[in-house]
Image (cartoon, rainbow, N blue to C red):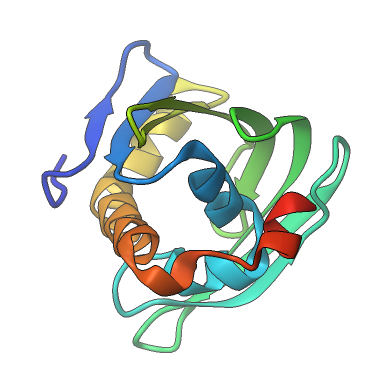
Length: 169
């Protein structure tokens, strides 16, 4: 697996991939960046890709739908259902891709220490075969680039939401 060097990727079991990244930002900002469409549209996806559909119903049982458009015009869609939401520290959702088999469970945990937030996303696939298909797509590189874009957004001064909006989340 290859990435930009900022993302740690492990396969602790035959059905899991664990992604770990440290962001130089408070946990609340990272959580907001993962859950607010106006922020997700600014970082989600590898460089050259654009999030053209970003629909989020952030509640347990709520759904999301994302469509990424690549530089060649190709679309990649994904959808899911939120199973657990504990702002700003944890979320669990199911997700599936339009063009790949199976549904996976994604557990994201955000731990803040000294103004830095460590994100650990554990993706549990239905089988080793599905996990290995995902790995073979180059997802690690794409995820690393996407998280690099998130880090850039979090470190920019315009990533902070107005106090009223941030307090309501």
